Amino acid sequence: MNRPKVISQTIAYKGKKIEVREDRIVHDNGKQHVVELVVHPGAVCIVARPSPNEVLLIRQYRHATGKELLEIPAGTLNRGENPRDCAFRELEEETGYRAGKMIERARFYTTPGFTTEFMHLYEASGLVKTQTNFDEDEAIELDIVPSMQALQMIDDGRIEDAKSILGLLRVLK
Image (cartoon, rainbow, N blue to C red; front, side, top):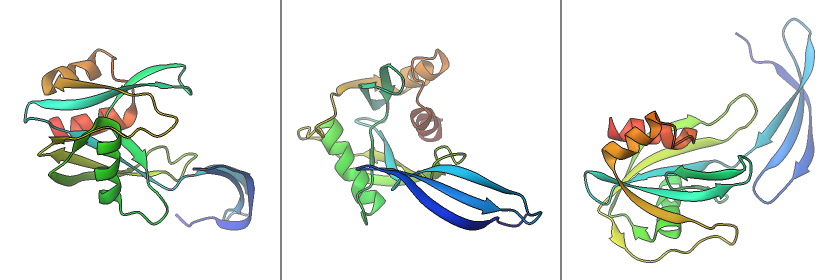
């Protein structure tokens, strides 16, 4: 399958973390159409294990869903930031734990139908308690959950966030 040719690109919106871009593309058969993309700098997510049988979950309100979600810690990459460094930073900012060990477990596109967001999944261990340093828009509660309970929370629908489901299944199963 050949890659379509990009005829034009227009930035429809530029925010602090994302931009919305319209690409006009043409396929080999001559058909053209506009693709709307959310351009994202990438992100990390972390399955943090205070002990071999526990994980850290954060609880926060997500406006897009209109409700509070249970998630693994995660965060957006700063321009030029190494994903592993970002994972260390985000874990400590959101949970107040510093990791002694950070191992990459997977890389994936979150929703390639409309965004460029590419995420790096890490497993963190050797955790040492420090203090949180939330971003101005974050109100986070921390839960330490037995690993088997976290998996059960996926099964019974209490964990609905895709990166968290993928991360927990990848690391705990």
